[in-house]
Length: 293
Image 1 (cartoon, rainbow, N blue to C red):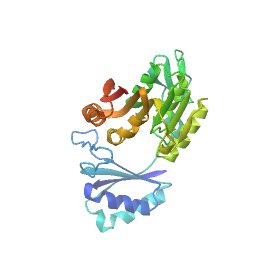
Image 2: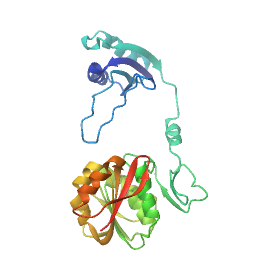
Image 3: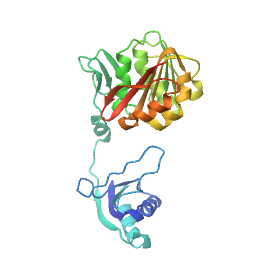
């Protein structure tokens, strides 16, 4: 493998990236050329909203090619194009051979939910103190247990009695919350998501963990539940307020995550006509909000 590295101003990134795609690069990545310096620019934006800027002032564009010849040819062709003005060739270099599977696996260690409850990738042995374990490998669907919102939801499940409950996991991703509810005694579990890949991942992960649940698209959620879990994001949670509340039986629990601390007030207001949300856990700038309906 060889990589072609270019220094590209913000106005040229899209054209250069498109050209590299046309030149059959295996992959094209864009990063802040000033990362880890005083000139670094952080780009943040709310999901579903346009970013404050389209890109960095100076970007490092890296294209991967199967061998040196096509990488050098791409560099030659790019440098004679009008749109390459203001850009600069940084390097064409061999990519060191690595065991990419082992490297990826090394980045995912067992995750502690509580001292006795852990999420453990299949290539690791559970910690000695683990009494309850979810086996889950990184995949296409969100939810490997590493994010604070997922850990807070699982911690909520682990510290309450779920025995015999009917549970809804709305926006299930990998199915990790539904599996957690099953591990702690829930009797009937519906897990739904708008992404069919998430539905398939949930069923596969449930089978791998030896639990039984139902998974499908959102219209598979029906009737009332003792607990409704939704770890999504603040904006869709606000839009879904009437629907989620309507699925909670009288006296049941609504558990919401994917909410930044600064968004807690917005969620409280959005759900005020339906129930009284409270912040019941915080971690790394995120909050868990719950209500007894």
